[in-house]
Length: 482
Ligand SMILES: [Zn+2]
Image 1 (cartoon, rainbow, N blue to C red):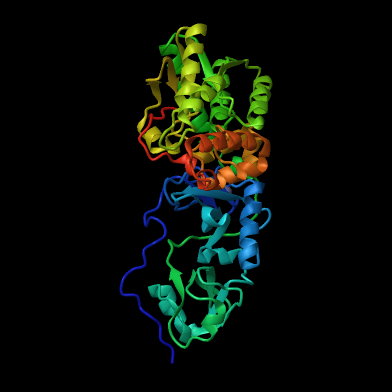
Image 2 (cartoon, protein in one colour):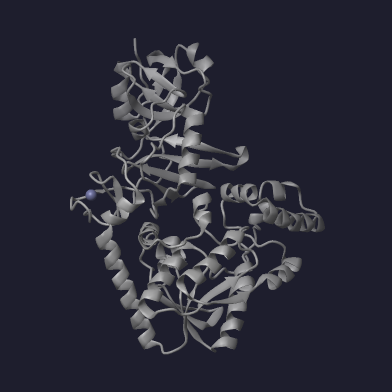
């Protein structure tokens, strides 16, 4: 006899139950992401992708795809993202780091970092089975159990279990398959495989309900994606160029572009050059930039023929570190010390006042969502700031940079999605550990500074090992421009 537990209360979803719309579409003919509801290449209507908010998805580079595929292969026996397929990553709210993986125009799963275990966890959705046939971490259930599992979100119970793959351990993510080996659900194991085999009753797998996605396999390149988005890219570009010319005509003061070495400021620079010609690049050198960033600033300056004017904040940062210790998420004294004050000094010396175009986007944070497209930072009053790409998503920026063949920072191809100071306390632990591996020299120097402060203050070893220095737990100075 088969008995399946009917849930009396709904399982709390791991993610918010609402989803973000009007951000990304997909063309199932061209197999590319779209910025609008119609494909510029084939002219066909596109399918909207429902993303977890904020929904600012970005392209997965080869490093990202390799990481996703390695984590899924280690756990399920096979990779998730097939070669030649375009994929997006959508960073979602998480205690540390989690990204939704969009492939074939649907959410096929997520990748989650578990800091305490120093590892990534693959979290599939049932649609992952479009691309991946699990050879590990699966269970097979009696076909009679499928309707209640799929329809009611019932757990997989011992009486309905036909097979449990022997590497399954309690807490593992698993695929649930029917007798024909079709994936019908995903969930988390409540017991080890060995224990499950000896059970006559009780729950084996707690299944998880998800917002359904549609995944359609098909190969494409990012050049195809640029062609499929020709119209929206042209539209946003001409709007931004008009905005730049309009602001300049209304504010007859010296003008420059703020360049950080990041993708958003690069897109801004290209737009400004098209609108105004070559003007100076303003670079806030905190002394805490990656070597790749310094190289990129030089390369971009030469490529576009725009001179760099540098504001140095390194010595001020280390002087302040002596008395304040490292900056923390809730104690970010760094931005004002290493960026805003040196920039204010520089602008006053050079021009008295200036208009700077800045690569700030409203989708980056709630605070930026609330700020306008033109503003003055209270700690940097000599600079009138304007953001031509305020309304652009990350995907707009990337497709624009691909279209332009722009020399973007190589760090984006090495697993970083956000580029600033290498030790930024706002970074996820996943990202900081990645940087410690890829940039051992600069990380070692930072670690030595942390150790000095730890000894001086009598702090525990965990303060460094568990990256507790990132959170001070006291209200601190308001960050205003990081
Ligand atoms: Zn198309």
